[in-house]
Image (cartoon, helix red, strand yellow):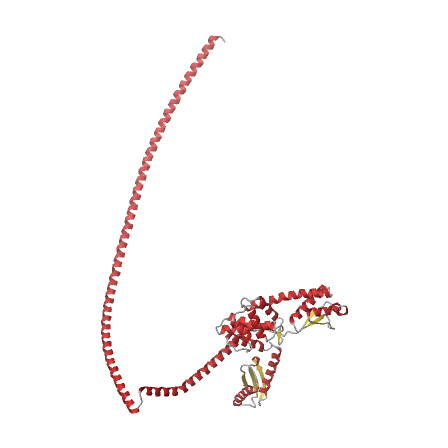
Length: 524
């Protein structure tokens, strides 16, 4: 292409670009003016709408403010009215109170005037009485003077004579009154004592079985008897020497008998022999080892038994030596009655009786549990078990005078001046004399019942007699054909008198004679 054409083409392009740019600028400016006009219109509309909304809000606020003002004003008016009403009510109450006070003041003035009038009368009457008393004294003096002149006695002599006469007349009356009071008091106390004892016995009941002096040890077979005896009897001799018991091996199948009067040794021997039989190794050395181990176990068991008894009786802390002595009582018997069981029973009975009469039940139980503590060592020390028990209790820290006196005095060895000693003695007698508690007492009990029934059956016209209520009541069956109602009453009285004269018995026995008349007829 020639250069001129290129120039013209370039100029044409430049001109086209210029015109295009100008048109574009014009169009853009026009669009901006249109947009600006539209925005102004929109702004004016928004301002107008905002002004309208603002006017509406202001109007609504004014209306709410007016409503709130009217409400507050009404509330204020109501409060003012209520306050005025309260004020009027208070004024009325004050007026009523003033009226009441005025009336009370008037009544008080009336009472004061009445009191002044009464006081005046009393003064007048007192003056009158003083005058009368003065006149009476003068009269008495005159009469006394005349009496002295007539009798020839002075005032002191007359008073002395009169008092002697009164003393003489009242002496018999005073003595009779004291005697009646003592009899009444004695009857009341005896009745109260019987009631306390009955309640204590009824509230506490314990079973007792008679202890024996032998124990049996089971063996698996009769061949074990030969091993227990040993060659030439060396095993059994070693065992008896180590334990201090007698071992009886006889023809009784399946058992070996251990005999001893000391229950502790017998129990140690029984346990040791059972261990040897279970172990199977029976020879002198092994026997001595097992017996020693069993003795140590028994010491621990005795201490544990003492602790259990102390806890069961709930008597508080005791010295360990006293606990050991209590545990030894478990293996001590008196007339075949276990002493530890007996001590616990006495402790509970003492506590029940003490509670009934308002004493310290815990202290009473302590006295009862320790009263026979001396029996655990009476074969080791000289003297009776009350004295030994008191000495041991004092030695091991017992400082309560009631407990020590109960131990030493429960068998009336000393003068009883402590009430707990009386309770212990009564509980001890109850526990020992209860039917079945002791072997000797049981035999006497059965014999007494037999004598009671035999005595009643010895009266004429009596068919049968039954001793019931442990011998406290006797039921007698009379023959209605031989005894009348009047004779039955007389027979009942005679039986009671015969029991009193011929038999020894505790307490009292109720005699009941039953006479029954039966009429029988057959309808055929």
